[in-house]
Length: 297
Image (cartoon, rainbow, N blue to C red; front, side, top):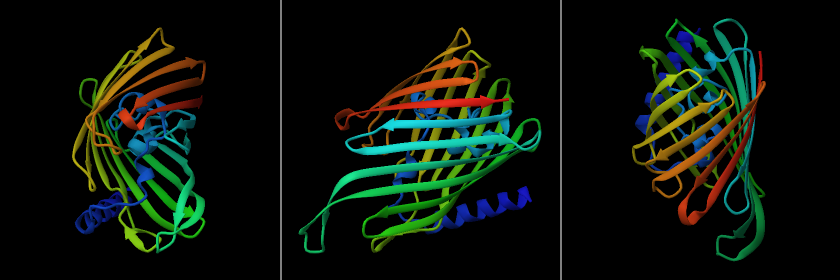
């Protein structure tokens, strides 16, 4: 069954890549929901060792032991509100399921009719609901799929789409070095107002060097269908088993195509982890992200 799902996802990826256009919709899917990866420059494809893997590389969910739940609040620009919820749970020694909810709301947009006349302000909403499955195929090889139902709404119109992410993770290609691959947003076009647009298809390839409980150094390459190839790098240092310091560098961002540094800190208290990320975007302003990660073994 799993091999069949992998084949289908690869087939859908090839088809969507052939027919895709450069303009894409549902761009809120490009926003990562976790503070820990954000502090590392959105580098997590080959790290993928907690529930944040659901966004970056669903194969990494197979590394989780027990159950994890993630709640994130993000202070974005202007009146944009962004919230994220994710969970993952083992269903056997080698299999894990998960799910997530992504919600973005923009308040007080200015409405105009076809003649350009003002029609009053309105709110817009973006929503994605996801279910994921991951399996450890061998000691080193893990695979995962993430199915998403996507909605965009405002007072006059709506659009919807379905998509799938495919992930693969190979542990210890050489000692302490992991390799990750993720293909994101393979799916149907989304029609919003009068225009149909492709989803923001992206290929991630990552490497992560890990010294357990001490240090992570990672690099992710991104090949988006609607933009330029980019490379991000990030690191996490853990001190005294409960304090983590993070920083990352993005060679370009989806917002302004400029490079940016990001910074983060994490605090572990028993089975709870509180993570914070500060990501500046130059003249656009600064963003702040706070996540609460709960682990139940």
